[in-house]
Image 1: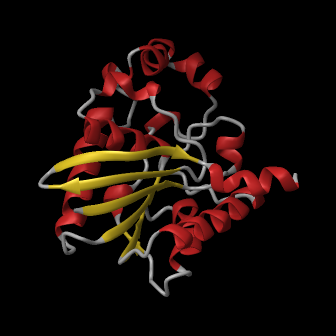
Image 2: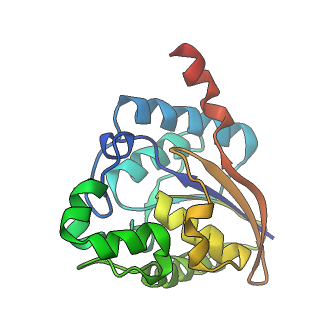
Length: 209
């Protein structure tokens, strides 16, 4: 079976203070860079991946590079792992978005599977795109491969929901902290969840601060 190590990127200024990010290319901040380095060390201690594949956005790419450098691998940027398109909400805080689209923002938090982000993607759109991407990546490697995928909180949540056979209405029931590691085993189109939202490798940073 294939081992998927699914990683969220590190902290940015737009997830430290909540702001809709999506396709905006917001870089890692200093904390995020330190988190990425710690994540690289954790992956190197536990796995020997054949590939590191990332969303093309720099916050994911820098996180992926911190992992790939331990294995002398080049990061493969894949557009299928791009963050959700937040459309007209991109760059806004939730309170700012509520002023223009109160009904849509309420739906996003209360029933995310029904929300149509103005000018953006739905969770169903995103799920179709990202699941197809993960399945295509898995099919590109031998069955016993270990693959690291680096993406975003929304991407990771919908991939995990799909792997568990859960609907998008459970979107807010999964946590994905910055630089969280999730591990999935994939075999014959089905998935087993081994670990979820693991951030133990960041404890060393917290003890320093």
